[in-house]
Length: 371
Image (cartoon, rainbow, N blue to C red; front, side, top):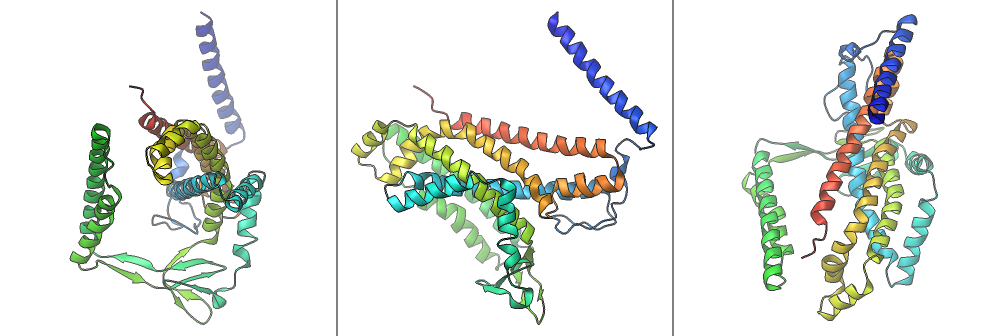
């Protein structure tokens, strides 16, 4: 009975809030609804993964901001995970210098606000780069200057689908080889070689298809002119600052998670593995990490969620993410704050739930099952 009363009260509270909001909007002459999404946006966006012009709709601008946010989140999560695992293992190194450097990095970065980290990278590093006229020349016909990183832009020919198909086949074959080798190891105890066959499938097969397809790619190389650079692919300094700042910040927390997970494995496991003749790399990969993952994954999920939500700090350095484009420019132009804020909150809620569901699934996959 009590649960029914609470449910009725919640429904009434939601209805009263919505009704009161609609009344207030009408009293102030502010339109409501989501029809504004089909109106012309009327503003440009500096970075877009899909075709976009100022004559497109606010809905299109919403999609552009969403894709920019997803790009930062995915790239940041991958880089922060790799860097965090490396630093976490380095902190447990027997080398005093390596361990000390890792400890100093972790303790320093963890106590710095993420916004200050973004400012340090953006204003302290990228904004001090030379002008386009005095660009820093990098390998592979790349240039770095105040306006960003200029790299050759690939132009794919029709035969690229053969390479993509070969890559897909190679990934499937690599997974099959990995599972077959693991099954054989469990049944016989024989440790088969996996690295070379997997590399042959994932890299060798697409490379062979690339050659047979007649090298189906050309490159638009940036050219350094008298005052500016022309051509190529430009990676915005705002994007680089956001990715680097969030990666460095989140990696410090991931490193501590990795360290605590490794230390949670009893020392006897490592000694037993060494007694079997496994070298340090095999001990870490086959014995320590599989047991440490059950401790690492739950807090690691929180860091992935934090990185995704911290990407909204992009508005402070001018990167066109979802908050900057939709909850900023679109809101100011349409004055439909309720709808814009609700959609923005819904996106971050959806991304958080998807990340949690995937990590829960992955946690169940790697969980140790007692025989």
